[in-house]
Length: 329
Image 1 (cartoon, rainbow, N blue to C red):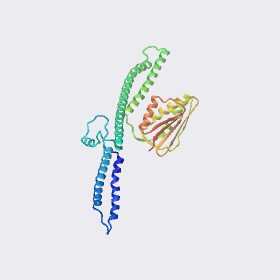
Image 2: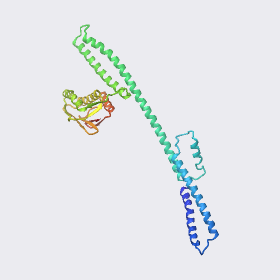
Image 3: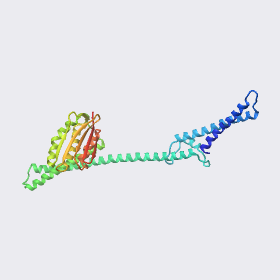
Image 4: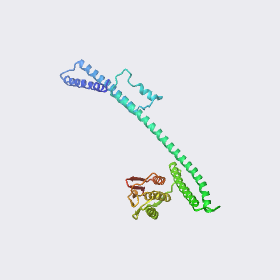
């Protein structure tokens, strides 16, 4: 039986009762007496109304309670005693379904799909986190091993260049000097990668000091201008006075700004102008760099981004523009 039919049956006794009340009002005068059959009809109508209303109300209440509280299952599982009792009250296979049956089936399917999707999402996130930790550990181990091997290469080169055990011509000295320079540069790159891996693994801790970004930018000004002269780029730094302080590791923040800003200056187009400005509001300090297009896939940039993110900041890049946001204290 459909829910609409049940509700209509619940209303029918009230309609019958209305007519009986009207009849009682007619025969209930002083000079009139109600027939005995009318009294019997009224009593039967009242009892029937109570029974039908109780039956339909209990049915709808139980179905809605089961619909709201029945746990969803995503496959064959062992049912709890409470679930078994609830399922025992479901309509049989031969009963005609009503609207609540349709809603319940849809809700069960959706709940099961949501449960499966959430479980798969948690599994994927856990697997991705484990994979990132594994990659970081492998990267840190590989960089350490290669760095040790580079040390074994740099030491004999340094000895050959500083202490001549035999006569070296100019070409040999230049080759050895070039090899030493390349080994030093490779060692620096490996150091960057090792720090990135340590940051991803959470193996590095930062101090929490009051650091003024204005002082950091002013300290970097000579280096940035020197890089700009070598690259044929004009560097303009406009840092307003009175920038608020940030809570962070002074050395690490200085390193991050140095790596990022020097990278942008070195890769700017010759003859262009790189403008570095700063501003602040109540919540964060903004360092704005108008530098033109520059490649951002670099170990120095990646390390700088991770250091800034570890301090609660963020980096946003648009076409020819880069902004660094750091929370102010």
